[in-house]
Length: 559
Image (cartoon, rainbow, N blue to C red; front, side, top):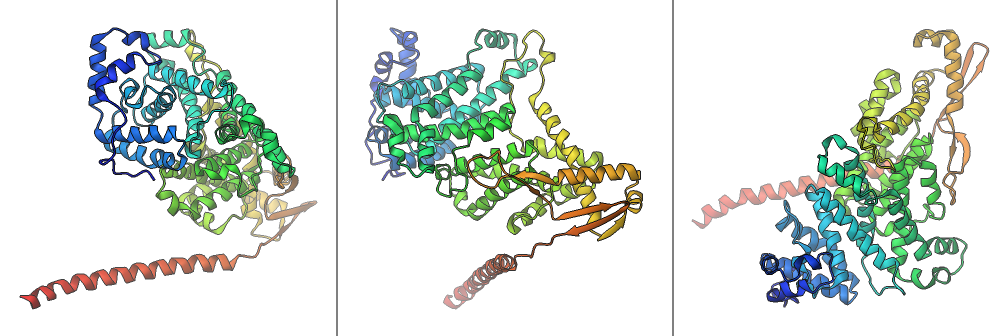
């Protein structure tokens, strides 16, 4: 097992030959370093400047990659890389790839993977330049071309977490570049000209082509269909799909496509992409990486919300938030805690919107957390009016993904550029405003069993005919298509989504509310655990107090 202590390990690289080795490397910049003594000296000095602990870490990472030691690679990647980043590179980039080249024997594959980590760290901790964004795209092209265009399956093996992060970061950098490119008023004239001259860099078609190619190469769709039908998935996998590298990259690319389609605003296609992924399977491949698990449900829930299916969105958000809450102690020790926690906060905001627009009963644990975070917001939405629209807009801007446009902006007329975030907000509010009548009327109707139409109109300060129209809208909106399981996420049954219904006979409203019995067992278990935690905390404080109070007495007795 790979150990954190490097002192006793002999490093694989030889710093004295770093310059000559890099000159002969098959990297991107061979011509720039050839026969250039000054740059050779700079490369050698740069390699010597790498901290000893980092050099030995790179040596361990390189050897584990060569030996396909996945468990040790996972430890290197998930633990040591983050810790060394915090210790040495919190406000700086990792060593330049040309300095690392000779330390790992000029291994082209390792350097490509190292560049992926190098640029990812730059995106997360620094502000990448336009040139760095271009070079990162080129490196991803090299990596995916190497994987997809090989004559046979590669022997390369990487941890699932790393494979997920490669796909996830690829899409993130695509989104970041699109946002960077669209803000022309903040770009210099040189940057605008560079963007004009390189439309192929981070092109939407290229990104989609990579994801679809990985799915096709891995035959992951055929494998999922075979597994669903009870057939042997290995027979459908083929030569490439039988390798874990291709299988998991293909699977994670399906999830990546869902994300891209949501960023582009095609929510129907996003849900269709998951038609062969069984979300009811607690042992599905998406559960192997927590960040992937959370991402799937975040985008499924968001797509349902944008399609006006608030009950399905609520169900998706509650499911994954319950999972996150029950496993939060594990995530706090994991390197992906920050990203999971951020997504959870966003989903609470989206859940607050969905529950406010379509009141329904949710899990008690999630409901308690939701009430603590967004109780005031929900009350304001249920009252309706302009204030409700402002609250929904605020929650949407905080919790929605970063939207993009598929094409470059108009460089000659930047004022004509449409902000995709504002456009998607209008799409959401157009549907939400129609839905606002449901929580508003429900808050009044639940107080009565029968009520005169004119009386309710007077309370709401509206005309009786307008109220009759609103009641009909309520009737229409409180019934929604709800997913009943299965592979088709767009299918389902039309069912009531709230616990309150009514009948209108002439000018009299007859109200019926279906009450669901409260789950007392969950309530007692949760509060019993809270009480036990409180008792344990008090006992610990009491022991510490007694131990602290006894020290002076012991000292006096000894004296």
